[in-house]
Image 1 (cartoon, rainbow, N blue to C red):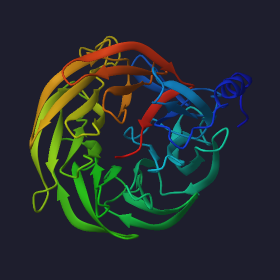
Image 2 (image 1 turned 45 degrees about the vertical axis):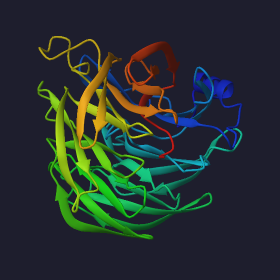
Image 3 (image 1 turned 30 degrees about the vertical axis):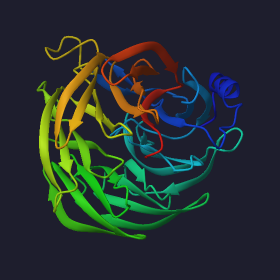
Image 4 (image 1 turned 90 degrees about the horizontal axis):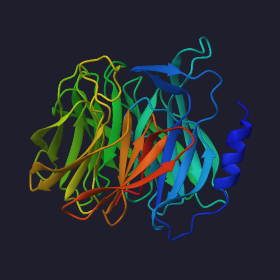
Length: 385
């Protein structure tokens, strides 16, 4: 599909400054294929290409430094982009595409794009094949391995990373095609991964030894439809968003004690309707949860609310308590912290913008800044610390 004139203009305006080696970057994957019409997701006719937006977090306020066409998708948890530890590469999955047989529908995709963030402007340098419906992915803290959850086939694809070269290495089966393998999060030591399965309500444990990844056959049970999952930088715990059945009930977030032998779920708290995104602060003290709060439902639904919610949970050992919350946009997806934990980015699909919050340890403040992006921000991510 050719770039539209308006998208070319947007790219020309934004893709002019190469990120520096000392940058602190956030990357947003933006879906242009779909829109929400009174609670129903519809495919956009003759949609422009999806995009990726690179944001400089060192700047105050944060600013867009590049935006380029890259395939992406809102289908799946908002972890469909990941950065290498040196911020040289971004990997972006595309779980869905417009169905070639019926342009009013979506079909599973199988693409992983490798983006060179240091090029001027940043550019896609490789497109690799994954399993069916690649969704959440993670790169280990060593920058040598990536795991991609293939939502439509119950597998996890393994890729090795050496410099700018990303290479398919293996595929690990953890369930059947209905298990809903959604996201794979890797522990800081690189020896274990947790894989959410919203189709059969499980979290599978993978063992990692170098480039060898195996399903241990151990599963954890947190709540209804575990979806997004994140692991603290010290490896002490993981936090998982359980999105529930979407029937108006208040849903939950759970804490997993990774220091227990074996690891286990130790706390579950209610956060609201449909928690899509979840992210742990760099120091491990807070968990940000993006709650749709019925903002994605039809306006005549008894469960509709005219905003989502950013909920902050404070972590104390193996417990979580609510510390703050604030209204956000509609059909909101992912969250990302700045390295100092003071800035929080929230992607709003309907508004096609990224909302910027400040957190000082006791108060959450909406700065009023909205970073406009070309497409609905389906995922936003920074380097895993």
